[in-house]
Image 1: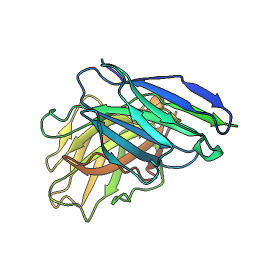
Image 2 (image 1 turned 180 degrees about the horizontal axis):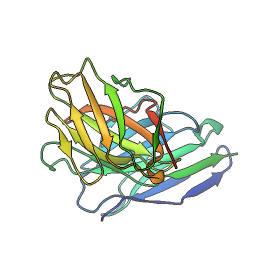
Image 3 (image 1 turned 90 degrees about the vertical axis):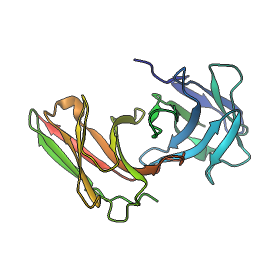
Image 4 (image 1 turned 135 degrees about the vertical axis):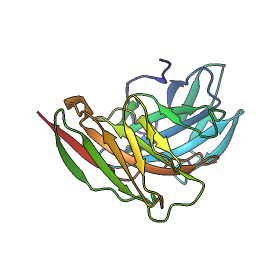
Length: 116
Length: 110
């Protein structure tokens, strides 16, 4: 069964450093997403991406964040200058909007980002 | 914010059916009811969704009341591996952001 994969599983960085989180969505999916979950808190939507553009973003997704689909398979989330409060699990998801009128999102296993 | 209400926790005996309720009294006509679960800190796992009819797949059944103001996710024979947080989420075609609430923490007891 196809699945979303994410690398690395755990990333440790120093405050102020740039990090890039990587995702390989399900191959025939067209929409891609990033969510995050701070330890003990709810899963929060960050951004959705379609046709090489951001289609929707939350208030969390400020200028420190960017997304990119650098090739036909990868989808990345970049945090330019990490803060302590960026420490969280980051989940990538993908969906196929042509799947019968609904748009089920399938999630990857997540990347745990620790900012020291 | 999520427009659903779920009990914070439930217990279920292994091998028995787990019935997880969700109240969504302000649901709109075009909103689907989706269920996801999250085991430990893993990525949310899609379970099932429906609009107004009851639905069944290999994982679970979804029962939606006729007025669509509430629904129940049924895991017919719960196992220890079904211990997770279960989220009931409303969304409509074209809306990209899923809004996760606090969900129901289901503990399956041996």
